Structures are given as C-alpha cells and as structure tokens.
Length: 158
Image 1 (tube, one colour):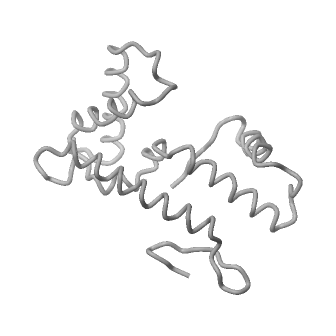
Image 2 (tube, rainbow, N blue to C red):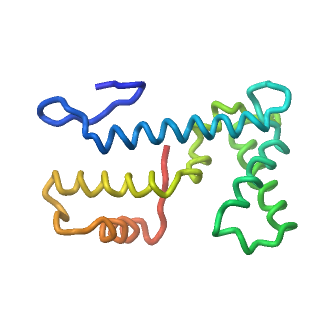
Image 3 (cartoon, rainbow, N blue to C red):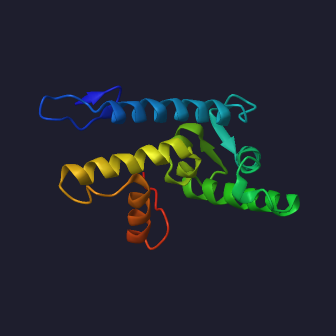
C-alpha cells in the first residue's frame, strides 16, 4: 500500500502498524525541517547550495553534536569545509548541489534524530519477532546484535 508517497508493510488485515506509520510521519516532519534549514542558506533562492553555503549549514549542525563539542573551532571549520566539498563532488561537478538532492542523499543520513534511530531498531525487533527470531531480546539487546552484525558500526543506507 502506498500512503503519502510511502510504501508500508501491512498485516493480514491490510492494516499498517501504528508504530511504522508514526515513524514515517516523524521522518517526513524531520525531512521538512531539514529542507527549511537547508533553504535558509540559499541566499539567492536558487534551490541550490554552493559549497561555502553547504559548509555554513554543516557548521551550524556540527556545533549541536556532542560528539564534536571538544573539536577546536579552527579544525571544525576545516572539517565542515572538507565535508561540504566531498558532498558537492558526490552530487555535482559544478560546485553547487540542489537542496532536493541533499534531502535524498545517503550522505545526509547522519542528520537522523535519536528517536528515529530508536524507532528503526524497534521496527527491526518487531520484524525479528514476527519471523520467530530473537523474540526474547530487549530493544537494547537488538541494538547490540545489529552493531555486532555490522562489526561495531551502523551503516545507514538510502
């Protein structure tokens, strides 16, 4: 079934899980917020970002990440400029990238909220229980199991 541009798994009565639907709505809201944030750096209303505009966006996002809070400001700027350059090279050779392409880019998947990550792991747990595997695991055990399967790192795909 396709609902709001989203293909949802259905149970035998053709119902969509409330958890899956809520996760979908949360992701759509998050993507809309991300679109607004990205567009605020588009000074010329071109629906594209130049490399330096993307670098500024990444700096504002990086300053909010606990993981990068101890990074020296001069290195943080270099780090974000390098990331912006790589993203632009991945999407275009013209030095600009469309906001729409950024929203669907696997490179932007790092901007997923912890609640969305938790919901994803919860969905994995439900799927495993439905196929008769790992029914005794808690959600935290699921996280450990998934990380073990990925050799300790989470790989987010588009």
